[in-house]
Image (cartoon, rainbow, N blue to C red; front, top):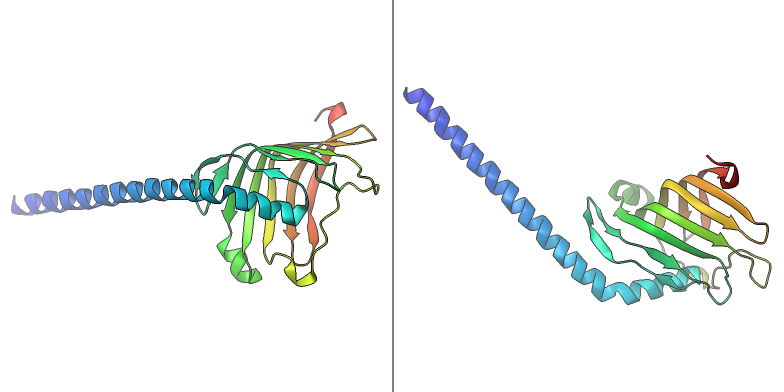
Length: 193
């Protein structure tokens, strides 16, 4: 009988410890989410300006939607026409995650961006190009990489050819090297999927 009571007592202590760990973890998650939401709100204009400096088009970053493992979720984001770019875009929902292993292997920060509900309207600018990046000094390029995953099909419109495509796949952008690579599956949206 004494052995049974000791086991029951051990299970109760283990259950109590487990419950405390779960409650503490939940409190930590909620507190971190609150802190990140406040920081996101505070630095929102600076982030938009920095992105404008890099790509040359005004960006309206969506609202903070919450934490995910190693990152955060953001609501609808818009890319408007710039001074030298007429191309525009809209993303319904995106998740930005830090990739610790890729960052260590590449020796610079790597962000994984998952895109849902994207629409891009490519239009020629006055120079006959769809996109022109701002002129920057060679050493002023940001030293980080992006891996973009298009989760559901992105709708792409290319003007003046009236071409509509659906795209799904992965892209890798290395800003320092000014390189873009990846795999996209394209299909003509007027013919269906």
